[in-house]
Amino acid sequence: MKILVINPVTTARWLEEDREYLQGMADEGTEIVMVGLEKGPKSIETFHDEVYAGPEIVRLVKQLGNSVDAVMINCFADPAVDAAREVTEKPVLGPAETSMSVALHLGSAFSVISTFPNTAPWIKRQVRKLGVESRLASAVGVDIPVLDLEKNPGKTVDEIVTAAKRAIDHDGAEVIILGCTGMALLAQAVREQLPVPLLEPASVTLKMAEMLVKLGLHHHHGQLYLTPSFDKIEGY
Image 1: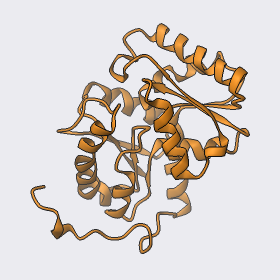
Image 2 (image 1 turned 60 degrees about the horizontal axis):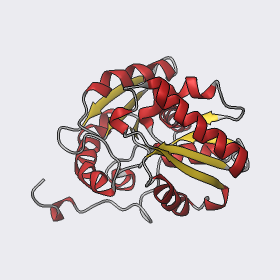
Image 3 (image 1 turned 180 degrees about the vertical axis):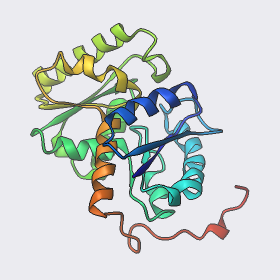
């Protein structure tokens, strides 16, 4: 089985780090094919960033989708997930949608801990789209940019843990989701300090992709997802 993992950013230093992490989480016989963007944002923290990542994500799925069994877009914003599903018959997964759906099986309410103050309204938009807003306890952003998450790991872990414990104690969260796949390597250090399940979205999405492939499932084309008219697009 081959899983295409698209890092929807141009920051090349994450590619091998993320590939090794996900390969270590994968089932025996699963190969991680990791690619990044040639042009686009260095990180995704705004809708502006997300829009510039979109065309390159779709291009990569069109180019590489037929050579793999599933596609994972490795960012909690789930950028271009819907568009990517229209250009391939293979399963395409985004970490936010996947981890939120898994959280429903683990507790009555979940909280998302991510980066920056726009986390709360962004997550609220996502849960409304998914129809699970009644299960969201809270969404909190720690004041550390994505590109700085690993500069001081101890400080980042402390801030995530503090925010998570507040969500558990004051908001009633029974599951914590890390709202940024850039937090993946810090997840275990956070998990060890929490009394509730912690979902690291990159690994959760990988395992869901493997399951869908093994079950022979993929997205339906013909209602929400249509085959695009590629000749309408100019300049790409």
